[in-house]
Length: 191
Image (tube, rainbow, N blue to C red; front, side):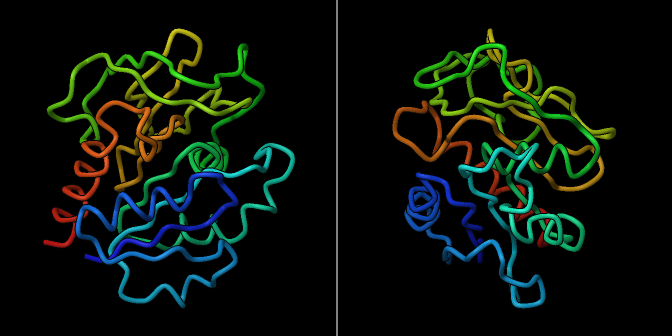
């Protein structure tokens, strides 16, 4: 299995790569301006977090829109990757009522593949000023926190998933399990 991590300038992009490597996946980090046609023989993408304010600096997210439009395989967006996915498909983002930095309690509302077999509540690590305000049409909210109503979402039509929190850091409980569940989605898609 080959899963590439798209580098959107996030501080933990290398950790996403490391978790995938640890889980036995062939992976590498690619710049977000890589043309889609150069992502050959890829089974999935992870759109990393990043520094851009997606609402006002979407151009700094490179070719993420091209990947979302053209890829038929699964994509997991993390933090800014999630916010970009939401706005790209017609949802909205904006400043959080209360920015989240550090440990936050997550409440899982729908298993939605990523949370299969996990507790309904656990702690995750946050690092964001903005958040998804409304999910795009055809998307489902999977999880929330007390201060952020959309901590995770997925498309009901395509294998597109997104997380506001950071599953790649050790401070997130069950982070590797979330990646394992995403890889199960990729395995199913490949069949």
